[in-house]
Image (cartoon, rainbow, N blue to C red; front, side, top):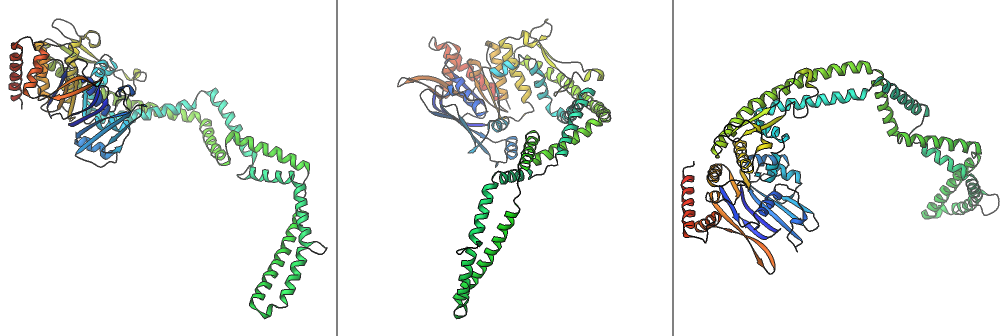
Length: 566
């Protein structure tokens, strides 16, 4: 249940707070005062897309915040999201002039998808979007499925598993292709495997080739450097490093026995002499091993170009080997395509049988549910002033197995359409072609009543439910809303006095100009204020005292009716 709503800098609303009661809450006011803005604010809390044009002119940011009592379903969603459960759920939607917005649930950042999943357990809303959706026959099957959701859950799960297996099998069959396509692909795969195998490459080959090429290209510089280093260390003339270190070693050796520090220096010079001798041997070996020629360089360049071509085609070494493994598997699959084709065809036929049985079971549930759904809608329409109305959900005929494969999809093999006869003596016709605005409002109310009979969504919002109705029909709709509000919290935007008179809490929305700016305000009405507003909605306020008396009588009648409700 929504216990508190706060709106800041949304369209004409500078700031307002609303604390609806747990039953029937009426929102009324002059046209253009901002009633729909409040609904827009609630829609943002439910995950609607934010448009920066909603931000109040001249401001940088705003927010909508709703406080809800948690339901068991809401707690389950919170658990699934890995969040701590709480008896209270606070949803905040902040928005900014640059079009950005942020969502927080109990102080934690959340994505729009998470918000929608959570609020679907808290609020159900009827507005123009729902009205428009009924004008699409594709929506009728979804509404029927929602009605039979509890009975069809296991069947749908079985169908979904079989459908997924069927799609996977068909994808594998598609991979086999025609005989000519297979031969072309087999030739290509064999060539690629052969090219990789015949290359005899290895993981570090490119690096080794580059290193060897650089050695050859820099051979003159390398030869000169090695020779000069050897000459400096062990040259025959005086001043070679090996001789100088040897002389220093002899000198320190003559006094090493006199002091431990001298002996340490002697040992270090001795080690240096040995190290220099070893370095000279290595330099000599490197010089002796320098055998480069132009032919080797040409061969290196060719091999390096080939290895890099392989890399461009198949990726680095490990990627190339992984590709070769995949290619070999694919080649083996294609070379045994006939056997695979027979196996997959048999599997497809088996899965199709399972899919057909699940689809038929789903169809039967829909057929049975359509009868019950139709009867309940008719009963509701009769209560809503359409005493002679008739209604039926027509589910398409289920196809035989021979025609099934071209008929089914993710939602089974059925289509459904609503048919309505508003008046006695008229045949049932497609609802989308004949229903009027007033009939649509009553039909939507009937639909909401039926849909929520087995639902535990605590809050229902009706925007413009009174479109196209008046008089006695408005009174019937008002009684229906009052009845529903004994099990669900209702927020209802209305222009109709009969509906307003049923309010358990009534909020008057108006707009005024302050400091050259228009602002929307909300005022909770006491009983006297409710009667004044009922009189205004009736159209007689300020014309005669009889209007006020009639409004008072209407309010008293409504209170007496609500007293009869359990």
